[in-house]
Length: 175
Image (cartoon, rainbow, N blue to C red; front, side, top):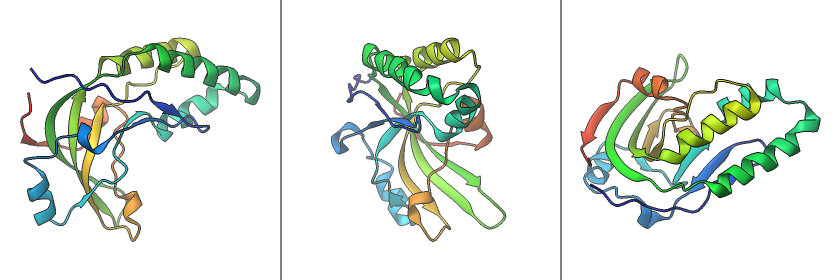
């Protein structure tokens, strides 16, 4: 059993993008760092855990009118404060996705076990009367892509279903 890591509380931005910023010492990249660098991957510099992605925002944007947005943000911020966002590091995977006809992206990600993310999405769905799938809890470690701007090398994983479509290849078993 791995130790639970207690990160800072998530940050909820004005566009409803919500993430936890991680410190370098909170992520173990041993066992994959050498492989990734040899294959031309770059280290993810904005190390974070996405809680609520832009794809989720597109869904809730339909539900909210402008008058309710601040009220909903306040309720979400309160729920974020109440939850324990501790997580356990799990397996490391290589994932790939063709973004458009000309661009393919690859990432090494670390799957994590984070009970609060499921609780958060139950709350969000009840609050907004939606059925948004729970964000797949993971940390992007290394990325590789064909875009001219490396900021766009990441691969969004808004659900477990989406994760499975990326044909993940297990690189390291941390369980």
